Length: 274
Image 1 (cartoon, rainbow, N blue to C red):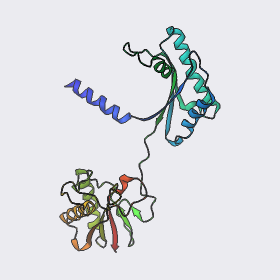
Image 2 (cartoon, rainbow, N blue to C red):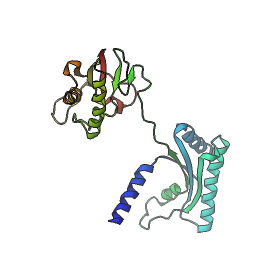
Image 3 (cartoon, rainbow, N blue to C red):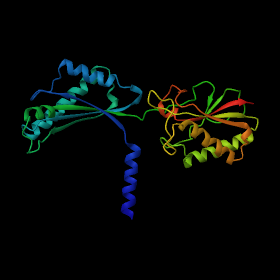
């Protein structure tokens, strides 16, 4: 049992700290560690065209083919890695972001590889540049005028409440446990501010070009945004919010927020009367 929990914790730690990586390679002639001008431009552009706000670190790994002695190949692979590092530093890439410069020596070739042996070896005479990226910032709606993520004390007609934690499985209009917990909070606020009347708006994203609406996998009908809005409507009635204060409507994919697709799979409350 203890072993099982150790394995689970290990898997959790891997998933939590897993990073997105981008890799670009530079190739070298036999016994050489100088970089030609074309490859130098490509590898510099690779780094400089990456969003600098997301770069966590750079790692540089040098390799050799399987010909030659171990000590020679290890030194040559280090020289190749350091050549790339010097190229970066000389072109304005900060030294502190480069956390690894390592020569890995030669790459052994499997005994059964016979075809294209010169080509395989040429691909092993290389340096790999690994860019470790920070997680991409989650898109937010806070900067959209008139859009809020919760109910405020004072609203005006036309304000929209984006229910950011009202989640649905893809293609489904059934509320998740997390969605129900969020609606509990929303219903309490609606009971406090009983002057607010609103329309519950359902939205979808990523439908085929000729369809404004998506199919609900549970009903098999093309009215997913309507069903999602109605689900929220019924749940709020269940939580004692007066139905006279509410209407619901599905808008399909016709009202994107202009952010990311995940934000367009949403339910909003549009304030219609105060």
